Length: 60
Image (cartoon, rainbow, N blue to C red; front, side, top):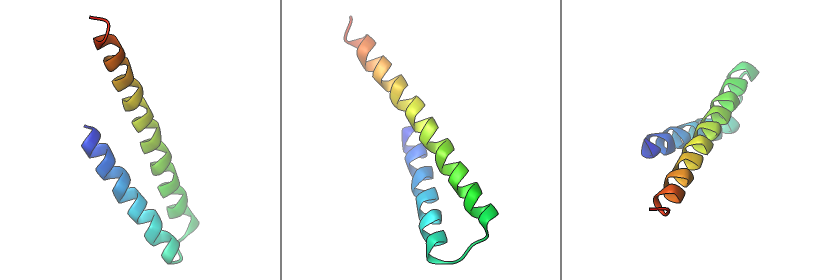
């Protein structure tokens, strides 16, 4: 799951980099910006969950 998220973020990063290299319409740029924000939030959720798992596994 984490690998898939990292791959997706890499793809979005590449798209945004290419978008910066050429002129694109603002609606596509806004869509890419929203995708990046969504991916960052999902990654935060995954990291919080991983922290909770590692913290609780140390209690046993």
